[in-house]
Each structure stands twice: as structure tokens, then as C-alpha cells.
Image (cartoon, rainbow, N blue to C red; front, side, top):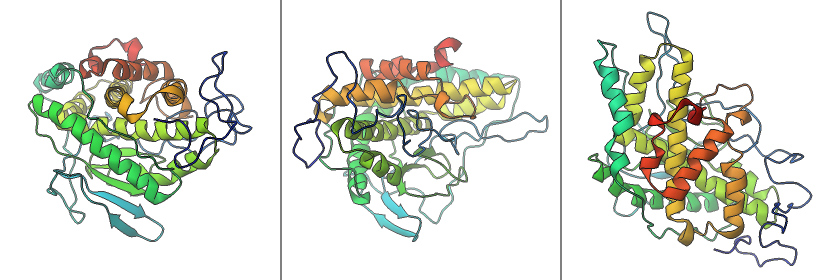
Length: 376
């Protein structure tokens, strides 16, 4: 896929890729996001490349809940079952909703907007049997034995991410590709495949799982991917040269793919098993480590999809360089200033995303059998 901006001819100044010394060319007068001097900072979009700001929601980690003993328990923000992809655009400022066509071949079944889905409650502690079963699930789930992903021929839409409608179209295509990629694997693992719902939003959003968010997230209670289009537009329009545009597209693709990874964890029972393990965890540090294992696995599963489709989607050349150096290498808990260590350090994130992208295999995304040093 060409690296130049969609819909515009390449300018004479546009760099074809990394400079001879291996460095990334500047765009405009600013370095790429995550580099020293890269101000003005892009909008805060969670724990990605060094955008600053604090997360207001844990994408897949535990939410505190008090027990009689005072131990914190997770209301884990993963999963969600809906047998349709309903892609809705939400303009929260005027409370209008627009529904796009569902992905072909997927019917509309499950909770409607007027219904309130309920989270799966964590199990009640017993003699340890529940935790043993949960540990077996997270370490030996049949999804790990389904083999490497193969391409579904997913192609990136040739659109500029400068308007709400363009970003919606980009995500609609991407989520359809994710469904086609993962449906067979989930079924091969012996689970029922259901597509998530998708909600577009801007400004602020109220979800059943939390009071607010600074970026894309997956909500267990609403069984929905929440994708924030206004930040995507800001990233795209920050600078007009191909390096920035490549970053914007790769970050949008990665964000949706990793949040979809949380949906896979829900469908396979991994998220429910982790909730039980967190419920029985002896301390907060153990709970946070479990959260990091969940989040790093979602990143790995998301990038397995990207790696499987990198050729037809066009994740090559400058796009691949930008993705490797700024999405893979600059994402981590270090960017959530003052936040908990619940998603994984930059080094851990780079390790797991590279495993997914390079091997295409969920077996290599089994963070639950990894050493603690790999999920720091």
C-alpha cells in the first residue's frame, strides 16, 4: 500500500522511509510522537505512545470491589457477547446516533440498547477448586492450540482520517476483517463465536463499566468496543506529511485490533477465569500482575491479526517502520503518569506485540505461562 496520504499525490519532499542512518524523518518541524521535543502533544489516548495524560478506565483490568475481608476484587472489563456487529456513530454533544450496516453474514441478536447486560460475577472462594480450574483455563485454553492465523485478504480503506464519516468507514472495514480472521479460531477452540458491537464516540462517554475514558476501550458490561473517533482525527491532522499519517493509521489499526483481543478473551472464558483468580489473589500486586498478563495478551492477539494481514493491508515500508518504532516500542505504563502498573511496561509490550506480529499464533500469546519478568 502506498505510504503517501490517502487521496493526495505525493509531494516532492515526502520521504520514502527511514533515512540512511536509520532515523525517522521529521514531519513538519516536529519529531514523531514519543520522541524528545515532540510537542505539542497529541491528545491523551490512554497508554499508547507517549501522549501524556492518565487513563480514566482500565481497558481490561480489574475494577475494585470490596469483600467482607476488605480484599479488592475485580469487576473485570473484558468480554461481552453479541452476535452482531452494530456499528454506531455517537455524537455525544447532540445525542444523535447513526447505525451503519452490519458486517455481512452476521445477524442481529442479543441485548438491545434498552437492555442492561450484566457482568459475570466472580465466583465465591471455596477450597481452591475454582482457582485451579481458572488457572487451567488461562494457561491451557484450546485457543492456544488452533494454529497460526492466515490472511483474510484485508485491505486498508484509501481514506483520509480527517472526518467522522471517514474514521467510521475505516473502523467498519477493520472490524469486519477482525471478525473474519478470528471466527474460525474461536470455533476451533470449541467456543461459540459472536461478534462484538461497536460504538463510536467523541468528547466523553458513559459506559456501564466505568464513568469515563480517554481512549478506545472494550466494555464487558455493554459487550461493546468503544472507539473514539475525535482523537483519531486529531492524530491525523497533527501534521500533513506521510510519517505522521502512517503513525495515525497504524495506531488506529492497532488500537481496534487489541481491544478486539479482549473480546476474544471473553469468548474463550479467559477473562472470566482471570476474574476468579483476581478475586482469590492474596494482594494488590498479584492482581496487577494478572491485569498485565491480560492486557499484554490482548496486545499480542491484536498484532497477530496485523501480522497475518500485513501484506494486503499494506503494513510495509514506512508504515511498518513507524509501527515498529512508535506503536510497538513506545507503548507502556510509563506513559500513564501516576497510574497503576496494570497494562505492562514498554519493554514487555514490545516483546509481546512483536511475538504476535511475527508468529501470527495465539500459542505465542500465552502470557499466563510466562515468567514475571516478561509481564513487568
